[in-house]
Amino acid sequence: MSRTAPDPTDALRKPSPPPAQDEEARLRELGYQPVLARRMGGFGNFAISFSVISVLSGCMTLYGFGMGTGGPAVMLWGWVGVGLFVLCVGLALAEVTSAYPTSGALYYMADRLGGRRWGWYTGWLNLLGLLGAIAGIDYGAALFTGAFLNLQWGFEPTAGSTFLIFLAILLLHAVLNLFGVRLVSVLNSISVWWHLAGVAIIVGALAFIPDRHQSVDFVFTEFVNDTGWANPFYVAAIGLLLAQYTFSGYDASAHLSEETSNASVAASKGIVRAIWVSWLAGFALLAGLSFAIQDYTATQNSATGVPPAQIFLDALGTGGATALLLVVIVAQLFCGNAEVAAASRMVFAFSRDNALPGSAIWRKVSGRTQTPVPAVWLAVAVAAVLALPSLYSATAYGAVTAINVIGITPAYAIPIYLRLRAGKRFTPGPWSLGRWSKPIGWTAVVWVALVTVLFCLPQKSPVTVDTMNYAVIALAVVLVLASVWWYVARRSYGTPTAYGNAREEAEISEGII
Image (tube, rainbow, N blue to C red; front, side, top):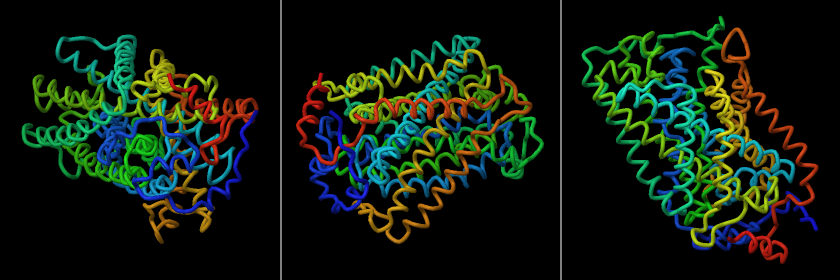
């Protein structure tokens, strides 16, 4: 027996969402019986997106990449420009989130606004991006942990030892997420202050302790090209990956909306606040690191394997470097934990609508903690598989981060585009851009189209097995698998029109363990 797919225009004609105190009723109106615990407040919702963006993860782990793909000039000015365009994406996405506050987030919005196939492919892209983000974040934390062990005890990081550290971090995040959303919310709230204080401490230490700093001219105009490509504009464009990778994951606020009070407003505000606060903090961090570089070449070729660790070491000595690395590592652990929460909710929601192989397993929710336990384990397991190439290729980490960007970024633009296409047929939620909706929305769509193409391009020349950008292959594989699975699951996949159908009630009850 299959679900009947709703006419997309029916959803567009729905009345405005009810008041904030009726979020559970709104969720039923959107088609789902509440089974997750709504224990997260507005600050906690902002905190999860801010934690996932994590300037102390993205900026730090890709700083070495940025040093060779444009250098300080591209890192600083790229951060400013990318941040502005990402804010447009976030604003436009926040508007659609306000109308459809569900754990499915992007794919549910696309399904409602454009139909089942739009939702299907959006969901698979979003899932690829979220799982790639877990791999990128936790592998970055493993790299920094290896650098810390190198400074503290002379440990020599290898590809194998780094991967074992990575697996241990994945296990830690899986276990933490099994305790329920309240613990996740508390950890994310702590994470916000840890990140802000951490950036202040790092920038302050690098500004006042070293005897020597780079000039303003160096930090804002020095261009470095170690890619092998001759065209400086191409190199600068590739260098934008640092900023674009960092500015991703803010859809976490939308994925946690079924666990957030006043989600129709709080989730939208959480997305936008997470972006602009990260924009300011990240600029300060990148500037602080760049001013404190003592020897550019030696920093790039650091024995620690992590250029920022060498900056700390040269500027502050072993003791100071060790302390700041701990600050960064803890921030990265907060970030990875938040990303596992977001990805597991996406797995849960996609399975709830029968989109994944084995959906009956992945949509189960713990009756004790109201957490999607199998979805948590699936998320970390797939992330581990995505990072396996790091055992064989030194450029694999860049490919993993690119997988995150080209998977999740198009998924952001699809519901925005469909909302623009819908025009007046779209009924906004309580958080709306008003007359700014079209200009901001189209700016977001054009930007996403540009960066999606950009990050499928090779990052090193000549292109070999070791230097190839495997992100485009991962994207192609996911799209092919999604297309094949569509013909298997298309009769059962679909978002419900309103909760209350007897079959849906039975499926939900079967998902409680």
